[in-house]
Length: 304
Image (cartoon, rainbow, N blue to C red; front, top):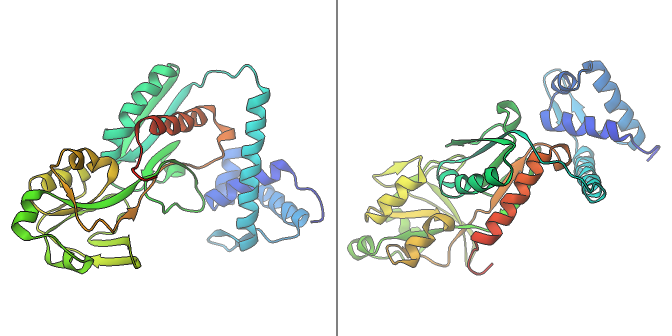
């Protein structure tokens, strides 16, 4: 490395990498795109590596840029933690906090948590939006996305809130009528309740089993984009569902549903996802920590 990099230049690089645009960062920081480009070139000179690939249409992060991105992100978070410890008089977070989540998770878990968060921090103006699709946090002005699933874009920052998995289950009535599947391939001959929710592949279930990851194409007469609707159909004996443990564990505990093919499951942890290091926003920082503690106190996955 030729010279120690400027913290401001590193921050500019993080923003450009997240937005894939010099112009967007320039507008947000009140400077010209040419100046942003100049600072990136200087950072590349200081580090002795190429951080970005530029064309007339797009900006992409290089392999070396990905490594710098991870280190810079960790460094800014460490600086924030240091500041928090030194700042004895932290101010109460205030202002609008926009949070997104999926339909079922938003209603069942996120909404009750936000009710408690609002009581704890009365100066926060909290808005919860629930969607059946992945949101673009930067474009849609979302501060925090509470989501299920371990596939997260590299330009986003994520903190795990709780371990979770999706499991296969059905009602005793359905299994008495149709029989219990013995292998994953048997699901193709069963009525399966298919969910099209956010980024879930429709009708294609990928599961971890005794032989590693396996996939099966499933069909059924009933499908929906709402997990709670499909859960109710499962209770009604209409078929087999692949659903998160947080949603079905009560029905499993009271015997209204039973696990099938217990050797198979799908990892689907619960995450807090945001666009910038927590150092930049007290309201997002306290919300993430609150959710982490909330889930730790109220939600635990058996066996881990």
